[in-house]
Image (tube, rainbow, N blue to C red; front, top):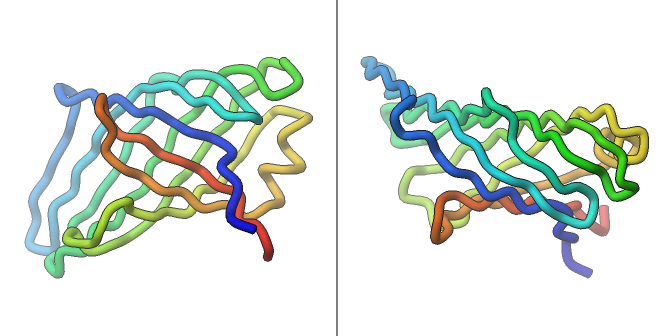
Length: 141
């Protein structure tokens, strides 16, 4: 049995607010974004303040950490928020999609036991209108 897709997040970067600094150790980018999330467990939007921080080191290894908060409704229809921290690293020439490990925090009484205790993985890939992050529950652990 394969891993189960639980959430898909469509991300729209805000290019005018992008920050960058180049150093002798690497280049750091901070890319703010907005977007929407949908799946069988949750539907909602990304609240203002979401940012993808990337450090590309001298060996062309990209270290990324995206942090953002979703607001919407859980699968029972209750209003809630979900904070996601999504971390990964890969060579800039690595095949796509890139892979990351998400961590969740939520005030949803229905989702907290599931999101706080299970193992998840994510894949990111450029879509037709931006970036698409697919989050999977790792099955068979």
